[in-house]
Amino acid sequence: MQKRFTVTPYRGFEREVLRLRNQTRSRQRDRAYLDWRYLGQESGREPMIFWVYADGRPVGMAGGIFRPYLVAAQRRLVLVIGDISLLPEFRGTGLVDELFQFVNSQIRARGIDCALVIPNVPARKVLERNGWQKGEDLVHHVLYLRPWQRFSAMIPVQPLARLAGLFYLAWIRIHLAGINLNGYALRRTTGYGDEFNRFWERYRKEGLCMKEMTADFLAWRYGQHPDAAESFLTYTCHRGDDLVGYLVCRPDSAEPVCTICDILAIDPASCLALLKLVIREMRTRPDMEALRFVLNAHNRVAALLRRAGFSPRQEETLFQLFFAQGDAASLPASCSWYVSSGDKDV
Image (cartoon, rainbow, N blue to C red; front, side, top):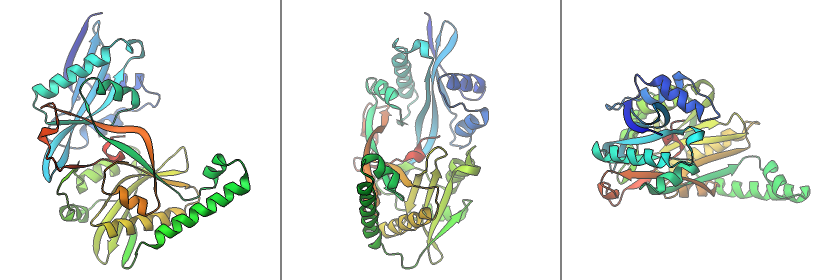
């Protein structure tokens, strides 16, 4: 087998990227979806596709898209890796390891400070053995709005399951009772205007490593998503005339769960008020049984989620990093990551 590794832009190779991506996944996507991912957010640097060819045909790839992040309040472009693909007949041959050794060499050669990926379990193992460092675990925080089905599955004796559900709801009410809503109001919004930029300017970013959450980012990530018309709900929290927080969530089409994608608030009290108001809103929806939020383990919002009644669950998910210098020396020692499911372009 003759192997060749190369880098191309996304533009001009759209059909090849789409074909290989769809050949290796059960969920099929179209060109509009890929164009949204690769071209929808302008960063000033062209996306890259890392290819592996075998006997003259493309059999594997990984996409790299430059996303603006704030690192200790300084804007940097982080290379976000996705669309990792390898045709089934080439799995187990070591070819994917060679692909990522090539990716690593290109990151170093091009002077890219930092690359980030939220991989599935097979990809995570490949990345681990090829020099990618663990960033943090991604913890699944869950709050049950209607816990009956959950407890019925756990406890076979139905009266006991019902009693456990009642105790759980009482426990949630105790948590929420301690959250002050004085002066806070919740609104549903369908656009991302200048007030989101003003909020972003006020938001305390010192010591954080996080994606740049301007109005343009929100409009691209959630408003222009190919599934946006039916997918995303955005709630804003106001105190008087001031926007003090917002939350973007996505009801699951396959199960009665709403996944929180992103939440930002100006201070802990506003974050707790926003969570309580959204929980109340979701309880009015008979189709919704649970709220879920995937967040890095040391995120400063995690403690607030527990105060609002969310329970953390450890899953086999994490994010990984690769540094051109070989370690995290390019990041300030006090830098704290803020990574959620909103960092994954899906």
